[in-house]
Amino acid sequence: MSGERKERGSPTLSVEGEAVSTVPAVSALLRSLGLRCPTEIGRLAKELVPTEGHGEADDDFAMTRIGNWFACMLNQPDLSPEQAFAFGRAAWIAIDGPVRWPAVLLKASPPDAFIHELIGNIVAPCPPPAPMPMPLQDL
Image (cartoon, rainbow, N blue to C red; front, side, top):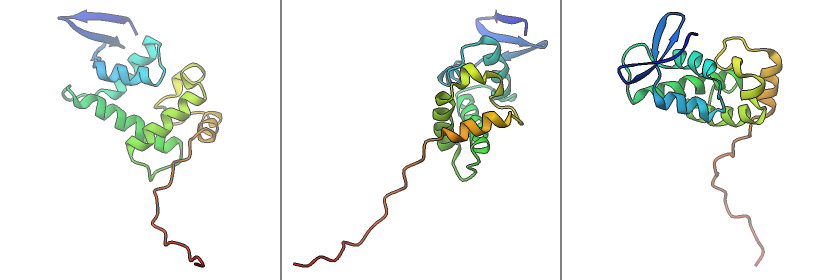
């Protein structure tokens, strides 16, 4: 990465010769995961910003992509991308992912130690309330 530069008032990153528009919402989403390194944010932004068109949907696309990745890593395919993002983000922060595992985010084959640690720190979702009949009582 050659660093950050500005063209016509629009922030861009040059990654291996390609200019990638960094959408503020995508950068904010990555910072919400605790990432602070501009190199990692640039790498992930390149993967998370759709190549066709930019706009408000970029952060939705990015959250869905990260959520799907967390669902896969947590072995929870039944979770929606939004649920997986919430549970995965909590586990990611709990294992200090931004410091200990920053380069692992969105990798197809992260280390087994990472996966075991992430799964070990997932917060169990609360089951939905189920209707129950009132227990029989003696009057």
